[in-house]
Amino acid sequence: MEAKLTDPLRTLIVEDNQVDQTMLAAMVTEASRGLSFVQTADTLQGALNLLHSYEFDVIILDLNLPDSQGYETIRDINKAAPKLAIVVNTGSYEEDIGIQTLRIGAQDFLIKGKYNGYTLNKTLHYAVERKRMELELILLYQEVKESQNQIVQMEKMKMVGTLASGVAHEVRNPLATVLYGVNYLYNRLESDDKSIKNVMDTIRESAEKANNIITDLLDFSHIDQLNKTEVNLNEIVEKSLSLIHHNIQEKNILIVKELDKQLPTVIADTNRIVQVLVNLLMNAIHAMPNKGSKIIIRSVNKSSNNATIIEIDDEGQGIDEEHINKIFDPFFTTRRANGGVGLGLFVCQNIMKLHDGTVFLKNRPEGGARATLTFKTSQ
Ligand SMILES: Nc1ncnc2c1ncn2[C@@H]1O[C@H](COP(=O)(O)OP(=O)(O)OP(=O)(O)O)[C@@H](O)[C@H]1O
Ligand SMILES: [Mg+2]
Image (tube, rainbow, N blue to C red; front, side, top):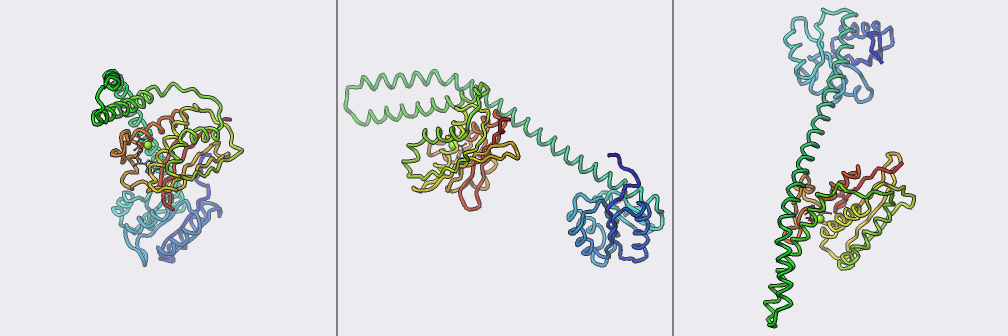
């Protein structure tokens, strides 16, 4: 809708000089033919109280109040009501101050005695419009920054993907030779020397581990080939749990399932989502050194958002504050000494992106971490 100068504005007048205050209120009321909502205050505290109780479009602000003087007044008002347009009411010869107030966050200024009903009204409408545009610009700037971050992230992913598959292909062949050679020697070993067998076992295990990492990497670089069908996420949860049944039993972990029976279907690649859930569940298990801890796995239908959510709550040590921003980075791990590679969450994130979904991991206030997967519900 187009704005008009006669549109009513919710106006707050903050002025300790009673004559000025009454005059301003009368002018604003008259300019809107009595339609504007006008409130007045004599002090900054009075203004803050009113801002707490009502919503305003614009404030006419005197900078010399009994409880606040100068530019601080603008900052305090801005902090209390960031969307409010501010018009400063300055003394007769304070044009310099007026200009300075614009730099601090006011949208316009009035010089006492130099305005009439018409110019006052125009100034107020102009300030509101300028504030609206300012807020829009801030929003746009944030959007641009966000998409810029996303592009950088995507480029990084593409680079890691290309690099990974290149290295993986190169390393895979020599590794196969090592594995083949070890197996060959093992079978031909005539001596019963345990220490030789132990060394060979270690070589084989290491080579197999390296091979698994490479499989993960190659997997990731071919990740765009998805096999999507209509699936029930509860079934995928069950499937994932059965795959790690052994790890759960070994640590005597209690799995509590809170699965919504009315869960709508989603379009997804079953194997990939199993991969995501297994990664998250394994992380939860790794984070809980104590036997007998509990994992809750929950499915929730957020029909109001057309979303289906899976949550995994653990009772582990949680994520260190300083690691929060790094856990999704490729090769970031705090479990390097215990065989962690740091690809789990990175792969999860990429798989979820390819499903138009998200994955988050954060600490729970009651301790432990919560992983949240969000899927779009199929229409
Ligand atoms: N449930 C959790 N609780 C606490 N910290 C976690 C949890 N899940 C992940 N983390 C942290 O995030 C890091 C990265 O996890 P990610 O799954 O990517 O790698 P990883 O588990 O260390 O290794 P892998 O590649 O074998 O999965 C972990 O090393 C750990 O510090
Ligand atoms: Mg992991």
